[in-house]
Image (cartoon, helix red, strand yellow):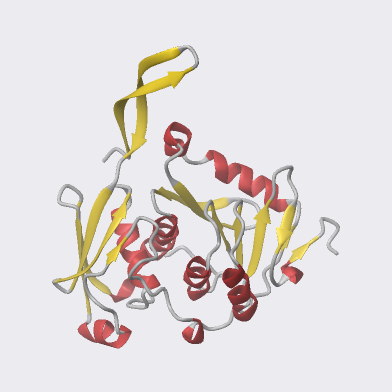
Length: 261
């Protein structure tokens, strides 16, 4: 399914008014059914719906691996995903059914509480000079963003390259799609990093920490609670600044100078 649509808008400048053709992003209400019950409806981009569903189940603590899914069926036209897991995974997770999650991804989703997310003890490091190249590659990846400026993006990477990339109208959804694809394809996330285009709030930090990711990079600033939780949970927050510099807000020992210091 295409992720963009065309509409006619009115362009107004000092020279006058004219009808113009615009590319805009598509928005899909996606309902995830868990063991035949309506778990959640999320507003998302109409792509990689299997990855999104798996990523949301992982974010909510319902599954820890793709092997725990007995059945996964996507109905793109109907805007639904049917997932079947062992019933004890549902009751054990304490998940609630039928909240509405906005495209931002925060409302109604728990993403794990700070007191139940284990601290991250990862030896992973990166050099300061590696960040600009990764972020510049990241910023060029989304054709939909280039067309519309209407989506967020997220990626899994190592020190040298981007490994998994997704975009979505919601910054939470984009990250869920990345983790979902990693589960679906058995991609190892150990000691790897996440790049996001959105601000690093406490919810985003908890989502990433729950999957054991030690470094979170963004071109946007973090919130104060996001930084406080990063300090508590062992996550390094890095912001790529205009001009090529970086700010490191937590656990700065993971980011070394290019000469290794």
